[in-house]
Amino acid sequence: MSNLNDLIESLSPESLYLLTKDIKSLPSNRLISVDTSYRLRKQRTTDLYFKAVPRSSMFEDFDEYTQHADSIREQVMSGVDL
Image (cartoon, rainbow, N blue to C red; front, side, top):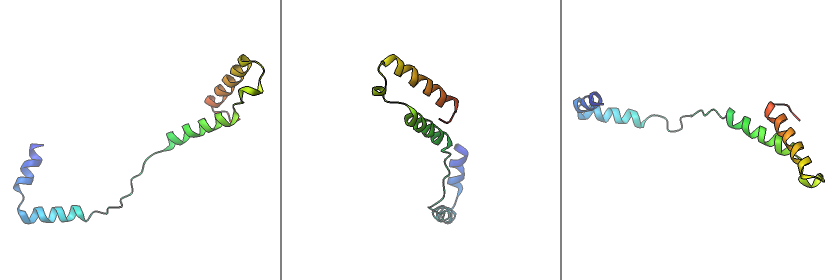
């Protein structure tokens, strides 16, 4: 860090002006690429689960519902398309 400070101190006012002018002339609309594949995969898994999971009112017994919901959850997590 001290090398950078020494370098800045050694610059003349004209060279500092030119340096700041070059920095300001960089495009302000530079594209920033963000990898969203992980987020999209998680969203698709969540959507698939909630499309396939039944309502608890469709079953007479809550234990039967939880077993069915657990089996669907396992299928979704394994990557099987329902």
